[in-house]
Image 1 (cartoon, rainbow, N blue to C red):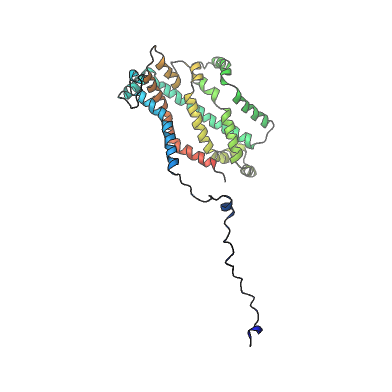
Image 2: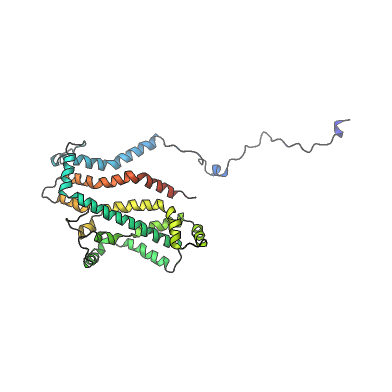
Length: 308
């Protein structure tokens, strides 16, 4: 029997030729060559970050140096660049001369209430403008944005007259109530909800029979924690450092920290070291807050920057 009479084998698979190209890479890897790889910062990156950090911390370091010397040494040329021995002495004198104890409590109350109310009202308004459908929504949003273009100095006189009519002159409510919510906060939260809150979640809550407040409490608030933390920090710092309006509506018997610090420069000869000591005391609560909540705020920013 010859080999020509044998039946042909049909189950033999064709062998790939040596000239065939290798398997194709995934589409994402071909479109983005660096996708999937872990990028590590090099020495140049760490050097630039170190230089930027030193430049950012230098004003605080100089404030501490100036607060630890006397007025004569601060005024010399070249100025000192190393801390002196009078830091505790100047801090105690500034605390007593400016009555910073009461001013600190007032600033904590004012900044805390303003920050909490701004976060609450801005979150509610931002959710309404982003996800609720009602007549005049776009017109109201444009009016809110338009208030950002009006200088606050234009409303000082009528606002002061209003606070006087309400009997809030020289009192903390005169500082708190005009700034319970800000247009910047409303616009910030509205933009976040537009991008990060899917319409399907809101519709799912509607299907389950939840009303708007229930949806806001159960769905919106857990998603909005990152921007709320950022908005709280920004608003608190702004309210703590605000000087213009509290200086007009309050007096030295019931001041906030920026208003109280003006007493340190009220003399004929200004003691720069004492002024710097007071500025350092006024900055310490903000530094303490950032040290305590900085990780949560940065984590919230990073969480809010990642979608999907």
